[in-house]
Every structure is written in C-alpha cells, then in structure tokens.
Length: 309
Image (cartoon, rainbow, N blue to C red; front, side, top):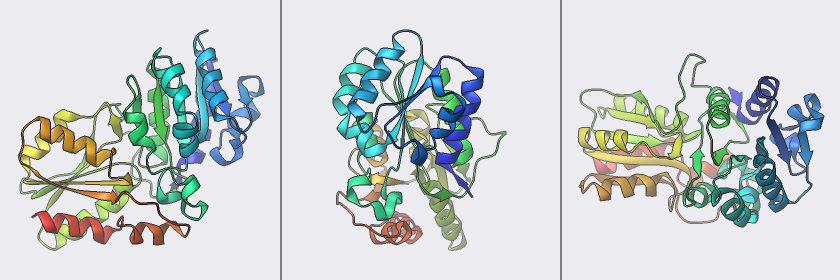
C-alpha cells in the first residue's frame, strides 16, 4: 500500500533539490496535500496565499513568465471550479508553464462530503485547450508523473487521491505522458476495460474474477486523459468486441466520454459500457461503502462486462 499525497510531497523535495526553478504555491492546506514537505526544505520557494485559489493560480501564471516552474497544490474541487476562470484565461490561453496538482478527487474523499468530492474536475480540465490531464494509479506512478509533468512545457492538471492505495507500479516501469499501459491481455480477450486512477486495482481484481468464470478481458490503464492514447484505444476496439470504461468520476465528460468520442469518430460499432458516477451527487460516508453504493465496486465492473459479452 502507498499514499499518493505522501509520494507527491516526497518527489517535490527531490525535484526541488535538482531544479532550483521549481516553486510551490499552496492554499493553506499544505499539510493535507503534503506540500509542506517542500516548504520545510525550501521555505524561500514556497508560498502560502491562504484560502484564495484564484490568487494561487494567478500568482503561478506570473511566476511562470519569469522562467520559474510553479506547482499549485490544492484540492480538486477548488482548483477546477473556484479557480476555473484563472486556469482558463491566465494559464491555458497564454499556454503558460503552470502545473496544478490537485488532491482529494472523486468519491475517495468519502466523509468530507459533496463539497470536497471532485467528481467533475477532469471533465472541466479536459475541455480547456493546451491543458494536459493526468491521473496516476498509485504512489510510484505519482512520482513518475510529477517528474514527467515538470519536464514538459505547458499547463498540466494532475489528480491525486487522498487515501492509501495498493502499489501496482514498479520503479523500473516507464511512465510516458499520453501513452496508455496494457496491464493484461491475451489472444482470446472478449472485452477491453479502460481504467484510470486508483480504479486500476479494482479493475485488475474484476479481470481476475472474470477470467476464472471463462471471460478473458484486456485491462488498459489510461493515466493520461489528455492527450488521449487514441491509437491504443482503437487497436483494442478492433481486437475485442466490447469496451468498458472505469473511473472514479462523473461518467459525463471523463474517461467514458473520451473513449466514446474516439470510437464514434472512427466509425466503429464497438459496444461500450461506462462504469462511474452516474451524474449524481453522492453523500458523506466511508469511501469503500460509497464506491459500492454508487456503482464503482468490483461487482459493478464484472456486471458491465458480462452485460456486453
């Protein structure tokens, strides 16, 4: 098990030692996002603007114009909705080198309730020109993703989870922005399951149970929602007769919508099912119970595949 927030804080310090141009802006929740680790080591390169997300993004835009690499650290709901105008107009429109690392996305936030459950953040960020959208699966891939986003030029939105998650990636694995990763495949796969973020662990569990019941499936992690690995999606659609998408996000505008757009524009008749939050607000509660109640359980993934094949 590993924690994405802790991994983010650790890699920030590593990158900070390697690159003096990296600065971090937080919104008075650095302890929660683990950006405080960077602040303790590099106090002169860490800025707390208070509970003012619009100001954080605007300040980051300004800092980027003098050659610095600002990383804004806050919660998903606040980065994408409270500061949406600043992200759009001050960062994406001029295509500035600002990175936003947003914690507490999806129903994983659990007991914090709807105000903190960012279920539409990736949809909003995906719709902005010039924005790259990344959602890694575990602690190791978070570190790789942060390094990759700092190395590239342009706006990036990177979503991390709050709770401890199974560690699936290995240090030797290569993380490439814009390229999906095939986790399991076989010559007789009946369906492909595309998944993003921590839902990868549940998807792999579902695939194992499906295999045991005589339904082999391919599992592909789409850690970069934008730019999307369209080539891989189309290949899987041609290889298997059904597609299922799995995400801790509203099914409108997220991974399910993105994959559906690719299939439709290619003129493929591949059947598709979307597992995700079905355009509803959830409630407060233990996140495992919320995931099952709102259709994000292993059983829901299995049922979606069986319905199609």
